[in-house]
Length: 417
Picture 1 (cartoon, rainbow, N blue to C red):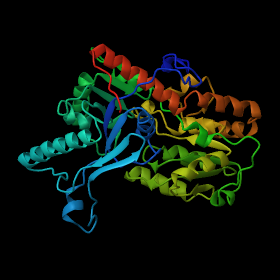
Picture 2: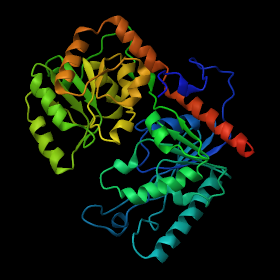
Picture 3: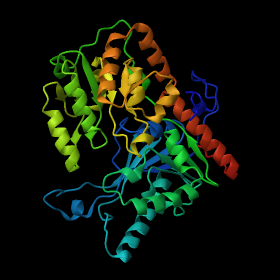
Picture 4: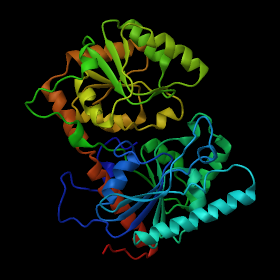
């Protein structure tokens, strides 16, 4: 572990330098595992900023067969084609006649070949010739070598083998192949970097960032608390994001029982799948001081964070969970809020800025201490720390790494007319 919050940045200045050399004229081709949701995920933040000076083509997953052929679950599906979003950012959806099929190798190969032809045409339409493949998951390994790419970049956002339903053996084999093939691998935590490193691989730690201006409170201005949250008594300990199997419901149940005076407020969609977690979740959710507020529009999330008295990161500490670097970490800090978390390794670089605990007793003590010791000095230190992790600064670091990698390969830089 680095032990310092500045080692990841490679000397990127704290304040933007308008005269600094920036990556420009390249074409990035990114395959997503979901549709384009502006600002919702790491790749949205990175691609939007790369698109200021480079072409970016984002490709959502193909339609499923049932979406095309019709079923009572997905009768219509949606059409394909190229759409311009903003700056030099485009989204391309595969046409309806190229959905996912999982049987008949001949048919699958024909569809894959047709998709490559579609991608080449889409790249040509936006003026891109030799793209940089920006891959978010090992399942996209099959595109490598098929698009005359200039470079392959793999961005590791999580330990994917820990996902529910994952075929661990196949996924790990695909990832080993991709790690050996990629010219540059970015990892959002140091533990992920250590796990993916190996001979001949260029694996670099670049943390998740924050859309700082969206979360930092306006100086001297009172902000109205969201209506549903205002009806809940203080102190409020809050969480934003999916309420799913990555959370530790045994821990949450014990904390809520031990601190009935604290209101635990969770803003996000609920998707708890496993039987064990579901039973614990239902017992926890039935407590009078637990409040499930449901999914919120993206633009409202900062208001909720700023209205909490403390923020929570109660993740299950599995092997995969320890490698996590939550997007919400710097969002909480940018809002100036005290944070209590399980002891994730990624927190070590923050020099005790986040309180950590493992037991319910430790969590209750940390929460009560956060409410009691939340002066202006502590708030400012959190805000200034989050500022160093702004997405603009993170993307400058990524640009530097891409430029260095291209130079090492002797690749020519692109230009945008």
